[in-house]
Image (cartoon, rainbow, N blue to C red; front, side):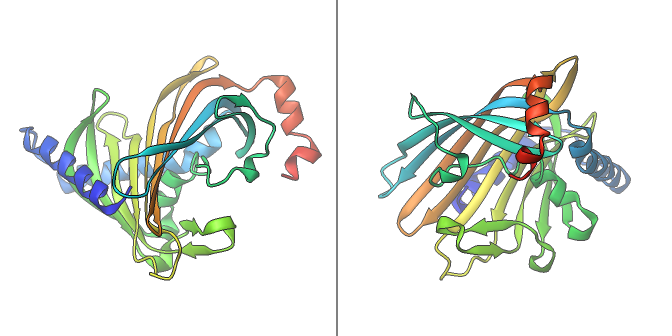
Length: 264
């Protein structure tokens, strides 16, 4: 989200912290929470089963600060097979569609489906963490940490129109970790120091995770994803929902395990 929205998020977390009497955890506990979260985040991708879900992307714009106006809605089948993502467009603005995912104009992708959280905790990223507050999220008590990644450690990309421009730079945000299992339930990210000459500005995102049943197991999986940015005078917001998680059946797994599929 834009900077003003990020400030609002910080204020919300601060307000929640002000209403609680819980003292902050000591340094040992803070370190333990981050260590457990890192182990979880870095191992999550390997432990995720092959699965499928419905990804719905709603795109909005605001041209004159008069409020968000809907642009389009895309419904896709997202297939996660052997740690890779595949997409099939099902509907565009309520009508059946056969357009390829790559041809969608500026549609939010879940390329962050398994990577945003992991990237923050990669040892080579050397992310700086600082405990901020206690907060609540969907009925769970959360440790909220601020984090920052320096530009020379970053692998976070912002692509310009048509993917012809690619920028890698510093970013910061908040990460919410539950107080019991030390799993990450929310990540916010604000891209820093984008050159004024770059066509995309004020880039930010928020990714929420929640529990979903996959076959006989319950997994913590993406629930909602929001990305905001500015292009000239146009503000753009993409809201993405993930629904109807299912274990990938044998027929689909065979299709996406074929040599032709792996060339995607």
